[in-house]
Length: 237
Length: 308
Image 1 (tube, each protein chain N blue to C red):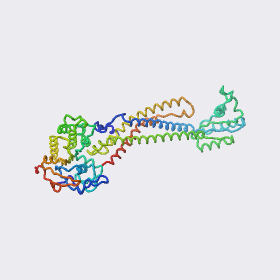
Image 2 (cartoon, rainbow over the protein chains, first blue to last red):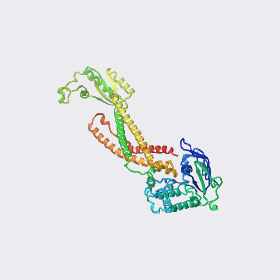
Image 3 (cartoon, rainbow over the protein chains, first blue to last red):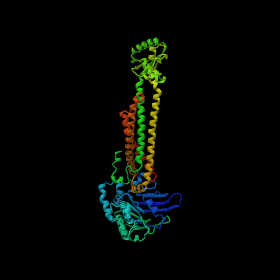
Image 4 (cartoon, each protein chain N blue to C red):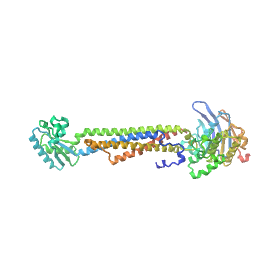
């Protein structure tokens, strides 16, 4: 199985402080589902930043889609970022754009024509239960609604990797399960999913998902998936 | 450049635009207004200098310096006749004594008796004024031409002098040229000030929309895509402000032009703007817009390069 993400002895340091992440070595495989858990301050968000190319590591090797992401030129980064969907912990919706325009943003950035994006964006709005809030600005949406818009924006471009930072943190349990089902649906289509969460109970909701645990910037591998490729999820179930 | 203005509406909404609501169009309007005035001044001086030079470049003046009026008259006639026979000379005009006196009168003042009339009341009778012959040559009066003229008239009048007319007004032309370059220097300074204003405005806009830019970046937006949004916004601000500034500047130029025309004398007659000068003035807002756009692009691209 070809790896989609490969970390070797990766360390991350902000400024002159100590390392936030130390000696991370793991491999993520296409079509797999990973939960990243750990206490607050363990470095989950920092690890995700390395995954969605918002940060370069201070040391070590990061390979994404088979290419070295550490020495990759800035000009090539946008092309790689378009292959990665991100749900930010703080949503990062564009405040002056409607829910529809926020969700359509990745498609527009990628140059999708207007006539080709209305249907998928409307479908995605329906899927996250916001079909009647297409014109609403983020400020008029509740926290949970904003989170659903952020998730819809992350998945609309059918990314090869979906990175989600606490994506169910602000939604009710029913919506959390629906969102996980959306992630699973994407996963069965081949998208690699990495979900950072405090809630280890979510793990049981996604059969075959692997867990990566961060403790003080170092990674443990409770399911052993980081050393050996996980079974395809249909067989794991 | 045209595709700058055909950015789809949804892309334009990424960076909210408010026409004439911010200070930028007004700053640009003031800059373009001053640039139009400075450019008009520079162009007018350039044209005046060129006009006067062209008028005088093929002209020369012969002075017959002789105290004895009879000899002076004889020599003047002989020299004029000799000059009329030369192929180099196109036109010869002996200045009447009255005209010479009128030329000098402002420097000498008028006698009490002359104040009520046009005569100088015989005050020049005791002053040995030279006779003057105005020449128009078939080509510019260079050193070679002057040498030929001097050689031709020397046997007829040993006290004659031949001077190029341009030499008489050379200090004035030098002054006009200096003023012209000062005006163009002001244009350059104003262009730099405009660029500086655009840099400040671009950086402020980048700071204001920092969050949105970050999101677009992380969704795979390129630096070019982001900078186009700012370029368009600043180009439109610059164009609107530029047109406003040019209209105000043009009104001032036309008013000054009519006042100069009313003076109706001397060098002021040479001041004016030709059609191609007007073309340059009309192009100033467009040039300002291009300058603003390029500056905004360089500023935004430079700032984005500092972000991963």
